[in-house]
Structure formats: C-alpha cells, structure tokens
Image 1 (spheres, rainbow, N blue to C red):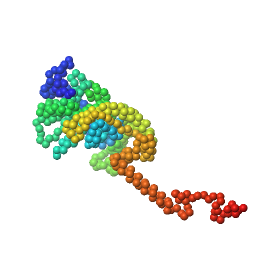
Image 2: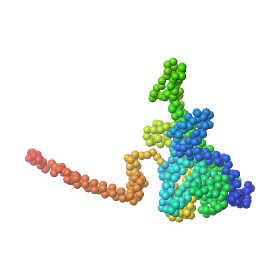
Image 3: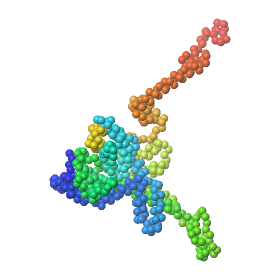
Image 4: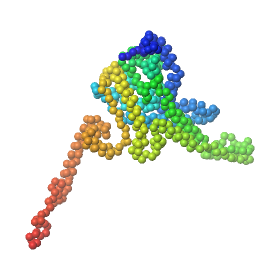
Length: 503
C-alpha cells in the first residue's frame, strides 16, 4: 500500500497520524532537514570522488596546494605541474579491483515472458550497467538506480536506466525513524532553449508521487503527479545494513585522501625534476656582463674579466617522492584486501598464483553479492512496474525472478578449456552445442549449423583419406582394408624348397 509523503510526514512524535502537510509546508520541512550544510557537504565530497575516479579533480588539487603553501610564486610553480601529474589513479584502480561481482555476466530469468525480459535486458545493456553500478557502489558505498522510458524527438520510446550517487541525491527520512527512507531527492539537469520562470533543480520521488522542486527545495505545485506505479522507481543499495540517515558517513574517504596524497607527491616529483639543475653564481664586477643570457646545458654564457663563476646544486633526491607514493598506495590497498605483491604485480608466476593472492578479493565479492542480490530483485520489481505503465511491449511479470552470478576464475588456455569440455561432456553436464556457444559466442542455431558443417567436412576428409591410401598402396602390398596373410609352412615361397623337397 502506497501513501503520500504529505500524509507520512504528518505523523506526530507520539506516533498518531496528524493532519497532512500542504506543499508549502513540505517545502519548509525539506529546507530544514534536507537543505542543511551537512547534506550539501556530503554532495560536495562525493562530487570530488566522481571527479577523481574519472581522472579529473584538478581544481580540487589546486585548492589543496593553496592550503599547503603560502607564497603565491611557490603555489604557481606547483600548480603548473598539476595537470601533468595525474598519471597514477589509485582510487580507480582499487575500486575496479574490488568490483568483480559482474566481471562475468550474470544470468537473470523470470517465470513468465522470459523472452521479453531478456530482450529488455539487452536493450538496457544491463550487464554493462551493473558492472558500472558495482564500481560506483564501491566508490560511494551507496547508490540508487531507476528505470524510465525515454521519448525521442521523433516520438519513439526506449527503456533506459538512470544512476544516482550521494553526489546528486538526498534522502527524506521518517520523522520518528531515522532508518526509514520515505522518498528521494534526485538532482535534475535541464538546459531549456528558453529560460523558464520555475526552473526545476530537484525531483522528489516516492512510491506514490513525483514533484519537481526549485533550488531552495520549494515544490513547483503544477508538477505534482501521483504516478500510480505502486513502487518507487528509485531503488537504493548500500554495502552495509540500514543506519541512521541511510548514507554511510565518510566511508571511503581513505581512498580519496590516498589519491590526493599520491597526486601531490607526483606534483612535487615533476616540479623538482624540472628544477633539478646546477645554478651558476657569478661573483665580481658584472657591470659589463651581457644580460638575459641562456644558462642551459644546451649552451654557455660569457662572463667578463674580473669575475669568477661557481655553481650551486639545486637538485634533490627524487626517489623519496616515489617511495612516499608507493608507501601510501600499498597501505590503502591493504584496507581493501589487496596485498603489496598484488598491487605491484610482484611474484606472479602463473594464473593460479595470482588467484591465491586474490582470495581476499573473492571473499569480498561473495559479501557484495548479498546486498546486490536483494537490490536486483527490487530493481526488477520497479522495472516491471515502469514497463507495464509506460512501455507495454516490454511488460513482464516479476514472479519467479532469479539470478545466477557469473563466476570469475583464472583464465584457462584453449587446451585446458577443451580438456574441461571433454570431461564435462563425459559426465553429461554439457554438450558440443553449448561448448560452441560459449567458446565462439554463437547463438544456439548458429552453433547447431556449425556442428553440422564440421561433421560434414570431417566425413569428407575421412573418405578422401581412405581412398587416397587405397590408391597409393603398391601392388602386392597390404591395403588398409585387406591385410596380407602370412605364408603357411607347406606353401612354397619364392625359390624356397618345401618341406618334402628338402627331405
């Protein structure tokens, strides 16, 4: 049963139902509880995570340099190296390493209209979407996804999946239960050709209604709609159990801190490498010395008589920046079950040895399957409701929904895969058609046609070889079909006497 948020927020501290809120009162409530500095700060922190994951964040890095250095000239010298020092992205590497639940595509099925469901998943590119979702989940520790139907300019419709992170979403909590989420505020992005009086900045979604909000979280009354889906299309997932406020606090900030520290070490590395030189110092009467001469290893400069030239070594040990970056990377990787040998690709002699080092990551993968299985079931329910309402040609029933996560393991050679197939076929757990489908990415019909073709070619080859061997056999020599009989003791051989003649 769905209830309007205007009624849900009207509950009294005693638990009794009070009068429903008006839209104006809803806006005031959202401003006081969802427009706080803490909410804005959380959005900003997770925006930085998104930027760092996508190899951005130069503005944030420059602000870090401003905090660490005071002199404007020193700041500028280091800021110049910021865009060129982002060649190492430890945050993205660790997040991708621990996001292996969808490394192999999962199998999803429903009991009724499964073919329609499979076509819908293909249209949504669901495997790719979930792989990216798992990475964002490990990056932010909580995300939201929602299906919707997009209308193209020509009027055609297509299903799409949207993803929201703590960078662009806020939770509306129950007045008396901080662990119960009543609805979601999702950041809206509009670029109209003509400016509108009421530009929406947020959209409020519940399992009953949808309404657009201005930047100050005041509702736009004419946008209020009871969508009648029966569920909230925005489905949330977190890596931990429900907690007050829903969001997982500052979990994952260790990755951000490590990323920034390593980036800073690389900035100083590049800057000091550029400045590593021996500076000439001229003493004496320099009044007759030419100005603006090039002091570089590619050329020399001239000094008049009566002057002496000495040098000062301005270089420093660059290895300390490299050791600092490696030290930070190894320790933050250990927080997520990655050993120093794994993160540095050391001591790996075979795929099996690498799998042994990845045992902690495989355990982490199993732990992540628990919330993701529950999340996918809820997402399938929302997907069925949205398709039934807005795109009936993809409508399906969620009854009997099930999922089988793909198992990722050490890659096998072609010979090992063939030997495994022969053993499984002998045990009756697979067949040649299924092997061809998996090995060559074929449909079942194409695999059957390929099998028929292979059998026909092999039959032709065997017949050809039999005829060729028969024709190439010399007169009097045995053929594959008629082996030569051995002579008996009483039969004469070429020039050899029989037993009777001998006696």
